[in-house]
Length: 424
Ligand SMILES: [Zn+2]
Ligand SMILES: [Zn+2]
Image (cartoon, rainbow, N blue to C red; front, side, top):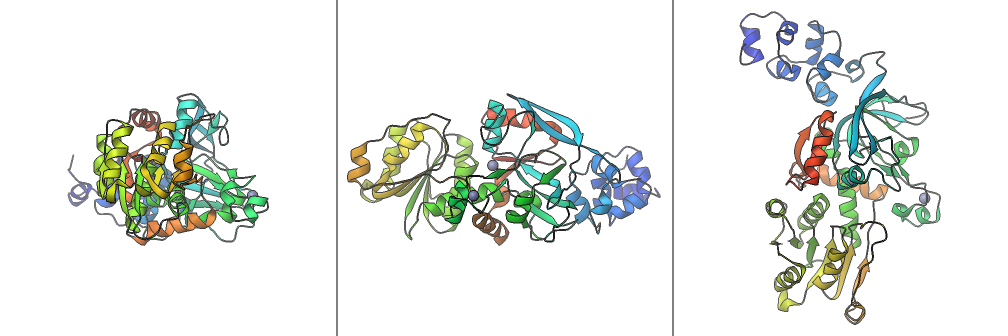
């Protein structure tokens, strides 16, 4: 077989159809190999774009980018089922054929371009449920961006073909908390799951309040970082940073790294406290001025303080692990008058022990930022689109929906992966 499709075509093959049928698995190569548009591929004899997508193209997004004018054509009329990951229980995720959702009033159906793995999904995978978000059997996954394929009655902001990022929740706007601008604490926060699927339904409230158009130059997998980045931006902002502050961030997971990148881009001196070797490089690459990788908490506190003038401690310590030891450690890192942000959520019923004298006589501010608000989500997408934020550093792998189990197993074994983009 010719080494490239271009060769194959140059050597006299008349149609792409032949090329594909002769054994090339990926139409992507066909297109890249010299054909200008997918339209041509389809025109050349393949019946449907569905074949193109199934035949190896990762996303319809790329189909569209490669030259199709509308997504509309990218779907087989009459197709009724889709592949989706269904969580059945502890470490039991199955890829099944389920009905493609239809858009009711105010809703959108989005063809998922990329769904990113997240620590929360990993927890859900391990535990088999999520108290607030998921009761199995259920669709899951919540960090996504994609292309609108159907807009329900009454939707005026979006139409078929629009690239969007739809957040995983939306506040009610009516309750005590919403009215006070603390929408992250909304009494009736509506969650949405089901990103690990070919299509996802976006409920009316999320369409109205927390769905954003993706600027043309931003790849969908980068736009999908909006949700975790919003949490990171919220957490950092809530720590009330002041110019010149030294910020310590405990935890080299996706959110710890994101928070440190946000702080470093904003000009702060960041000390990253990480556990695993793979996280050291990532922390440096993302802008940490110093990386502390100590064998125990006592040493970590000592080494971190030694990086501040007169060992006085950092101005801000952010805990981004979600274990009680790290919460306690954070309090030990700050200077008098400093701020601690308990950003990582621990398992239910976790208790921590704090030195009350230290907290009181050193006048330490304790905060614990949760989730995000629609305004912060907008800001997060702006940061991603702004160009200084290194979105690609956070996506360390790509996988097909069928590989989801394997991806989670790998993440559980603490590999150096940050996030994997699932391309359904
Ligand atoms: Zn997440
Ligand atoms: Zn509310």
